[in-house]
Image (cartoon, rainbow, N blue to C red; front, side, top):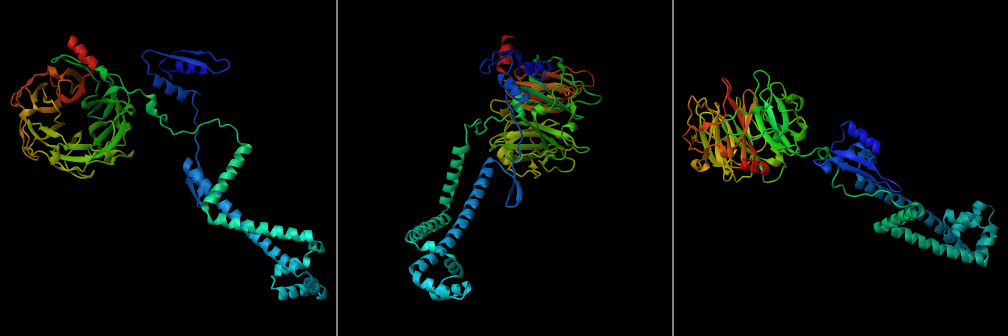
Length: 545
C-alpha cells in the first residue's frame, strides 16, 4: 500500500499528501500525513479512487421477470425471489395435497374391506378372475377402480389386528395432512411463514458471520468529491473560447487603472461573457437558437490567466452558426425560483427554474425567439423582484416581476420595453436591496445611480433616460445593480480585464455622464462587465490600505 501511494504521489495523481508511514503489526495501521493547505476530504476521496482502500465492482442484476428480461435493484430482486418461493411452496403443497388425497382414497377402501372382511374374501374366492373380483367388489361396495385394485392386491397380513390399527392411524394422519395442506393454500401468510422457516433452517445449517454490511448510501463517491469546490471566473469570447480561472487571479485595483491581461485573444476576438461561480455549480448555456445546454463548473477547462481557452464547440453539441448568447450559474434547481429571459429586441419571459433541472446532452428548448432577435440576459428571480432593463441609447425601465406571468419553456414572451428605431437592450438586472444601478459605456466611462431615481413603471413602456450619452463617453455597453460589497470586472475588446470595488465608483444622477473607470488604448472599447462579491479577507485588506 505504501509503495503504491508513493508511486501515485510521484505520478501527480495524489496531491496534498506530505508523507506516509506503515506501522502495521497484528492489525493494519497506515499513517498518511497531509499538507497544511490540503483538503482532507479531497485527499481521502482520491485515496478511495486510486488505491485499494475502497474497492468497487459492477453488477448487472439481469433476470427474467414474467418471461421478460429486466434489470432489478436489490429490493426488486428480493421481491422476485419471494414471489418465486411462494410459487414453489404453493406448487409443492398442491402436489402433496393431491398425493395425500389419493392415499386417503385407498385407505378408505381398506377400511371398507376390513369392516366387511368375510364378505370381501367370499367375493374374491368366488370370482373367476382378478378383473371379475374387482368388478364384483365395485358393484357390491360402490368402490372406485383404484380402491378395488388395492383391495385385491392387499396381502392377508394386512388383516391382522395390528395392521388394522396401523391403517386407521395412517388414515387419521393423512386426513390431518390434507386439512393442513388446504389451510396453507387458503392462507397466504402461512405460505410466507413456511418460506421464513425454510430460510431460517438454511441459515442455521449453512450460515456464518456476515463479512460485509448493507446500508443506505448517503455519501456515494462522485466525481465532484474528487474536485475541490472553489470560486472561479468563467469567460467566453465572441468566437466561442471558454475557460475558467480562480477568482483570486484578478486582484482588486483602483479606479482608473489599466488592469491586467485576462486572456490573449485571437485577431478580432474579444470576451463577451464573464461571471463568477464555483467548480461545483451548474452552468447553463443559452444559445441563439433558444436552446439551453448544461455543464458543471469543473467541466469547463481551467486555463492560465492569459490562455485563450477551449472552443465551446468541443464541450457543447452546437450546430453550425449556433452561438452562446447568455450563461448563468445555478447552485440548485429549487421550487419558487424562475429563469427570467430578456432579449435584444426588448422581449421578456419567465419560466420555472425546475423546468430546466433535467437537460439532455443535446440541449433543451428554453425560449422561442422571433426572427432577428437574440437572448442577451437570463436572471434567476423569485416573483418578488423588480426588473431593470437598459438600452444602448441610454433608456431604462423598471417594473415589478409580477407583471410577467410564468410561461412554458417554448413560449416567446411579452414586450418588456418599447425600443426606438436602431436601439437595443444591453442589459437587465434585478433591483437588489440597498443596490445602485451601475452604468458603463463603450469608452470606459461609468457611474452609479440610486435606484430611487428609477420610478416603477408598467412593463412595455419607453422608459426614462438613465445616462447622458456624448461622443466622449460612447453609448452604453453594460449595466448591473451593485452594492458597496461588490467588485466589478470590466472587459475590453483586446482581452484586458480590470477589477475594482464598486464603492470606488462615484454616484451621480440619471442625467449625468459619470467618470472615467478605465483608460483605453485607441480603437479599444469596453465590451462586457460582470459583478463579483468581495470576500471578508479582501474587504479587510482593502480597509487596511
